[in-house]
Amino acid sequence: MDGGGSDMRMLSLERDGIRLRYSEHPGPLMPVVLIHGWCCDRSYFAPQFEHFARLGHRVIAVDLRGHGESDKPVQGYPMSAFSEDVAWMAGRLGIGKAVMIGHSMGGVIAYDLAGRYPDLVSAFVMIDATITRFPASRDAIAGIIRQLAQPDYGDVIRRYVEAALLLQTDDPVRSGAITAAMAAASQHVAIGAMEGLRDFDPRPLAGSIAAPALYIAANETPPRTDMEQLRALLPHLVYGQTVGSGHFCQLEVPDQVNAMIDRFLALHLDSAGAKAG
Image 1 (cartoon, rainbow, N blue to C red):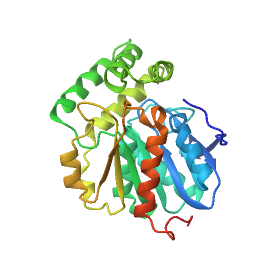
Image 2 (cartoon, rainbow, N blue to C red):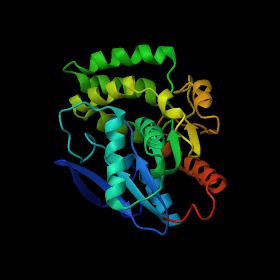
Image 3 (cartoon, helix red, strand yellow):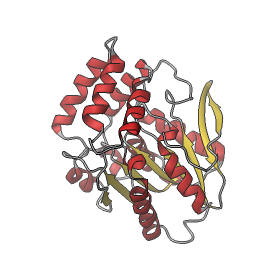
Image 4 (cartoon, one colour):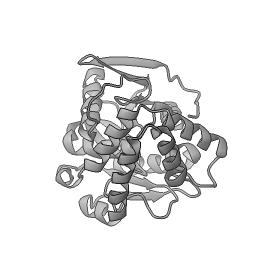
């Protein structure tokens, strides 16, 4: 969405015939993996890519299967499939332990990675992600999935983004670009990934998660996740909230988001852990 000064050239790996695109910046400090949200792509983390590259981290921003410039096979899109791809890419790239930072659906994937692949995760950040749902959210997602099956699914995405993900105070040019790009997503991916979000259950994984965890909420009412439930699952959870931004706070107020992540990592990763493995 917002270009940065760091090199975001496109690279790719192929897993079982599926091409997975990503960008990478080398650096001596602990790797940071950036995981975008539903119907988005790696450009939605451009400010964070530039920030962590400038600090000296090795930074990898992925285009998830079905998104951006990665291949879009006709298949199911459970959260575990995305996590398996990211874990596989980490192995192929020799990343070792990394800080996993996910926005929206990407935050769910970061949580899933922390539970299923703890040896890969030094810490993880969930930015305005729906990990634990309120009952109204569970009811709403079923209706969205039905609407996405209609021929006008692009308009459905547009209306959903405008109504549920943006604030009137958000930058209108950026908001328009986000809405148009998300509405152009592939229909089968939009449905499959939304079904994956509907079916994701964070509870079985909670006991396996020991990595430091940060949740950053946007300035929204109601909140996107049930924080009481999430804190019960992750008693060590650190919480922060942005001021004056909607769901895409990593683009709208990147300085706020970056500062919270920097402080979290400084407090919860020792100097040895901050080095690349």
